[in-house]
Every structure is written in structure tokens, then in C-alpha cells.
Image 1 (tube, rainbow, N blue to C red):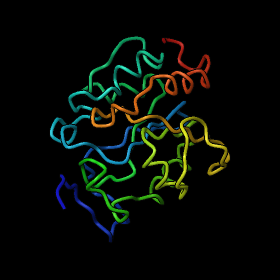
Image 2 (tube, rainbow, N blue to C red):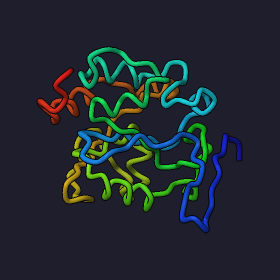
Image 3 (cartoon, rainbow, N blue to C red):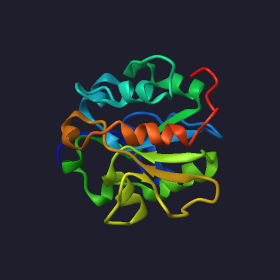
Length: 185
């Protein structure tokens, strides 16, 4: 298997040195969750840093941030009540290299239960499918109660390698679910 790996310590109960750290805090509006960090992002040390990735432009265009942020600004997302994580924290690479063993669904569930964001937004169908166990998933808000206080939303992947599935509309729809929560936007 190719890819970039972080350190995993089973005795410690999970990821000791993830490829990229989570950006999480209690009571966020939304936590964006991908499958795994891309190799370009791992090399840059920043989320969604690959050439052609639409994540940062989409955040601004959909109204989550007042200006277009750069990948190296990812820690600033907490200022806008936005968090970041991935389903696979120990490996970086495209979805095609990921196996079920790479995904830590229980770890994600625990993180979300602990911080209770308003929405957990998967930035691709594969992450949502692996987490929920559903094979058929549409973009938008899922009619499924995984968490008592957190909705689950599925977005088209912003990855440049998924450009044929791209649409900004679900991103805008998600932002409309969060009215008035980001006063600086």
C-alpha cells in the first residue's frame, strides 16, 4: 500500500501522531470530515492543499468565510465555528489506496459526541458511506439520526480528482442550514 502514514499506537487507544491534527472545539457549527488527507496536503502540512482542490474557494463562495483562506490558514477555521477531521487519520492518499482497516469510525463517533457540532459534513460520499454503513447516499442532509444533537450532511468532494461530480450547490445548501451563526461572514 502506498501513501503517507502517521504513527499509530494501539496501546494508547488510537492515533498518536496523525498525518494532520484535528481542528476541533466544542459547539462548532460544522465539522468537515474527509476520508483521508491527500498526499499533497500531507506534504504541505495543511488540509485541502492539493492543486485543483476546491475546498477553500467553496468555503468562501458558499458563505462560510468572509474571504478565501489558504490551506496554511486551516487553524483559523475555528474563528468561524468550523472544524476539520478525517475518517482515516493515520494515512494520506487518494481513496483508491484506502481500505476499511484505515477508517476509524468509532474514533470519529467519539470525537463528534464529545464536541457536539451542529452538523457533521462529509466532504465526499465514500467517507459518509464508510461511517454510516449505507451504500446508497445522496448529497444533502441525511435522514438518519446518528447523534442526538448533530445532523449529517454529505457534500460533493472538492478534490480535483473528483471534478466530474463537483457542484457548489450542496455547499450553499449546507450554509443555509446555519443562519446567523457566523456573524463575520
